[in-house]
Image 1 (cartoon, rainbow over the protein chains, first blue to last red):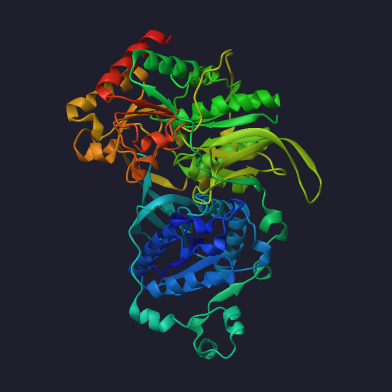
Image 2 (image 1 turned 120 degrees about the vertical axis):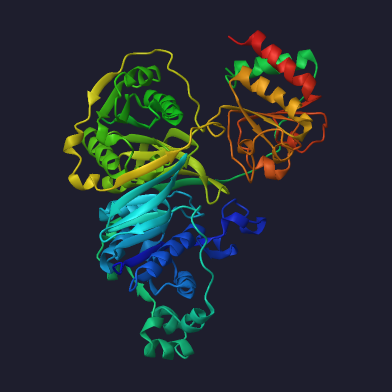
Length: 292
Length: 339
């Protein structure tokens, strides 16, 4: 029998940038995040599925979500619980706001130190940034071996995992010692649907802030009775971290300026198929070093 | 000290195109800053590698040449590059945004506690004034690229931490040998000082890689054919033009569905996204599902018998005419005027 694994999935609630309409752009060309639906980052759902498969295989394993974000990001923790996760941690604090990838990965790594995990699983990248940096950076802060672009855990051994990963021109199988961090590629298996029984069981799961906001709500009473309904909520003070590396002030990269993408009507040069026109075009392309 | 480093990726024993593109860009940046361009290469059997790197302007080539570096593995690469950067203190380090670069560059940034900007489409040198402190910065690296799902273009800077690091996708920058070529100085990297036994704990068991048959993503010039090529035989004109121009052949979905060429050549929403310097659309109407995969091409030439084809809205040059008439003329006049 395989040993029980303590698995933590790094997940992010993201604005759905894939279906951005005009209503989401403000007049000055910036993005109005509030106008976009907040969703579970797609690659992180793949990460959740890969984690749940490991849990299925190793009796006694646990899967917890760790996410950093505003209070409403508790929604993705509940979503994950409906699909099979045991619980989650919400890292929320104004001091985290404006974090770049390095500051984000630092905060997450401090929380992970406190939680402790045999396997950390993250989606390859988030659709609002597409950087694919936070996973490897977390591994870097923690000094954990990393396997990126994972598609499947093929074998769970006593102290290592055999992982199939997708690289640019094919697939590679690697064996990495535990503890380790995996980032999961979008080509991995789809996440399982929400389970009706779990939905019933966990629908009142809540963070302390959510309970405090509605002290009369049923969930407050239930949370007091049932330990498994409590979503852990931490601020920067709850994790051992250097406050100077957090948030906007602690981020080495800054946004100097942002411009909207404007699709201008191009200056089209209309040409005919005459020898004169085609020769003129080819000479121009060669002269501008577009060709040759 | 405080030079520009470009990480050189080795692919099947050869230097990846993206690394040569970065050297080309790095050369401009080094000239502007008045510093040296240096290349960093890890691999095995690398003797003579400095020749090609010199041709692209590298003044120093740092080499770690040992069997331990093949195949690529995250931890030893991250440890060696981090160690070398700590020792040499470059102000800028550039990586290709390949599956290798995107795997280990973030790890290097965490080790060095500095910023990293992914998938830049432009790199420039410029100044910055911090509005809060009033502090002025000169000669910063502007790391420019699409952000937020491609809906905005952001200029990112890394004012206080060094090095400034960025990744760039293949095919985004142009590749051009230096006008004046000086043999680079080869310096061995003291890699044994940087690697610990734990860095070798992840083992690659096996890899199944396919040869790159079609390199659309990396092509500087793409000749794409659509349904308007008329037939599989007619589509061959695209190959003829591509061969003369040193281009790669792409296609619209209509053309691949009609069997004019392989599915691997499909450009667009359900195919490949390309952003070549030159995109020649032959007999392609320009449905949005196609144009999303090519509308960031620097120059777009369309050949279409219909003057109102949607492709002409995003084209720089719209040739109204028959492909079977225009393409042979393009071949003829390219041959006459090149060299």
